[in-house]
Image 1 (cartoon, rainbow, N blue to C red):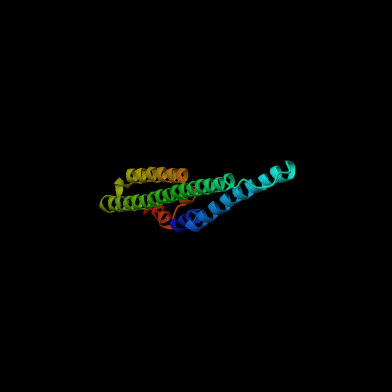
Image 2 (image 1 turned 45 degrees about the vertical axis):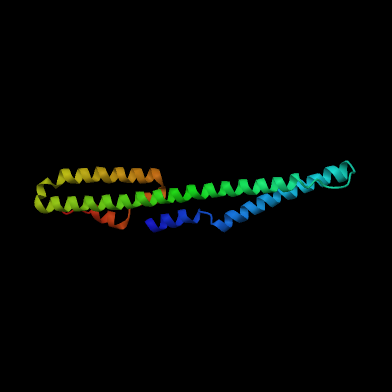
Length: 154
């Protein structure tokens, strides 16, 4: 369960190469659009020769910097979100394991007192499932070992 959710989330994180390529393509596109517009306006419409090459490269460089910063920020946010999801999944696993120990210990020492413990464990598990469903739907899937904990001794 955790591996599948982490794998899906990690696919959404852009690599450094992808970020650099997006920034280069964005900067070059703005540069090319600026040159094309200058050619259309000055040469074709105004019938003047020559290009003003100061503004277009500057716009391209600024667009490169903006796109690189923007894509890097998005990547950092996704990495942080993935870390949070991993932490939540680990907490969920540890809490469920602790609840199984409590339930088994209660049953072993006093089988008549297991009903209140079972009810409390069920409430905690339902809250965990709600929290996981709110955080990320892929993490809300109940793992196989949690299904075994629902089968309680009679």
